[in-house]
Length: 198
Image (cartoon, rainbow, N blue to C red):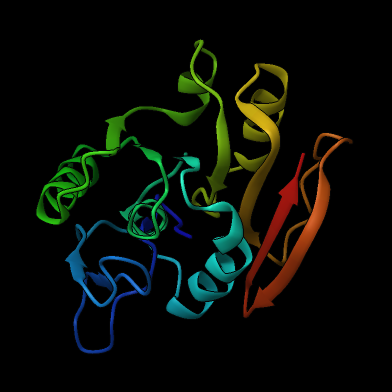
């Protein structure tokens, strides 16, 4: 959830604690983590994250996860806390990447990494495939559709992979690969969030 790269363990700042998010489940449940004060960086709310990870819980243990727009780090760190096998996070902003690295070290997450990268360019290079992919780009950018096309066309998705998409509910839905099946969909205010399976 993050618009200008969001995600931290994905959550909005806690009331009265600006620029902090809380992991809501798993081994590090209750830990509060900082993220940079960058305009447009908007972590996914606790309520949305809780719903998402309830959807994903049966698939998470041992899963390989990719967070294309990490932001606060909420989604990727939440997945790591809940026993994902490997978590890779991307973000373009150096300050975001540095803070996520600090949070990874703070939690001792040896199976979690973050890279400073443009998601679209990163997806054009060969790499490993993933079981779960989080797509929550800045709402002002039209990045969902091209990311989905690259994921499908260049072999980034394992068999029966899940793809989470968070987007502006006021805009038309993106065109997705025809073989992706919707599993869940909800709306929270201006945010539409959906889970698909290949």
